[in-house]
Image (cartoon, rainbow, N blue to C red):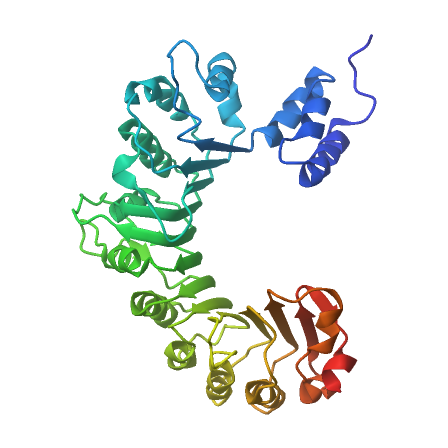
Length: 405
């Protein structure tokens, strides 16, 4: 049988790309296509092995002669490493008595030289963290070596204690940093002598990682200049629960000159009032802003004082085009003046560029037909022809006519 392709290869690549977007996590369809012929094998591998996820528990090998599937695959087909762009490490936080069993695999993992995305995430339930010092040394070395790969663009750290923040200085081309539930190591290690600062474009955090961020911010290179440059951050997603988090986010807001999107999640006892004054000084490029509030069970302020802070913001020059909000509660709340204040504030003057207001409300105890019986009223926004109002309750879109009544 002829192995010649009837459909042009570039068309096949588009088909496989689209298939990869809808395939299941096990890549069942891609594996089936890969087994049809050698042409599709190479095309499918690009997506099958684009991301590899490893757990330090899965890598614990009881016998050297019985290696894990990933190790067998890489030993027999080392070119697989050239397809991988994203590496996920899931850390269990448990000790590993047979550390020597990681040696061969860690050597193989160092062959991944085209990594663009690196995730290191604890498998423990937050706020518990996995201790960096408990991770086998050879795997720590692998993670640090991957940080040195020049193609690395995104680093995400979550649920790691005693993390040596200085190692992030190895990520010379990093553009996106996501960090939450990370505490810094007390002992300082030497910082690589980079010739130019690492210019970030996206930042997510700190969420109980204010101490780690403060240390990161204060890092200086051999030339005495900051290792990280935050002035070009254009997309910032922040979490705030304590003052260390607040101060780290405020620091970034004050230094960015090109930010277009700012998202803020506030968990009590923190509140939005910590940020309104800082947002006054946000760059004139800020066009989209999103607030998320997770209220405690006994909260007396379901919106966490957000209407007052938005009122302060509109008193200052701004070019905001979209304001989004997400309020999470355990049960339906009684009618509250804060909803009226929110409607009056966003429907008032001071928003010359505002086009979209989206309000997402999540009530954990709500189901089915209860939703239609509890919808805050926004008569002003609903009647404003210049603003598109979107309301969702438990992910169900509510007609604006209901919100107008």
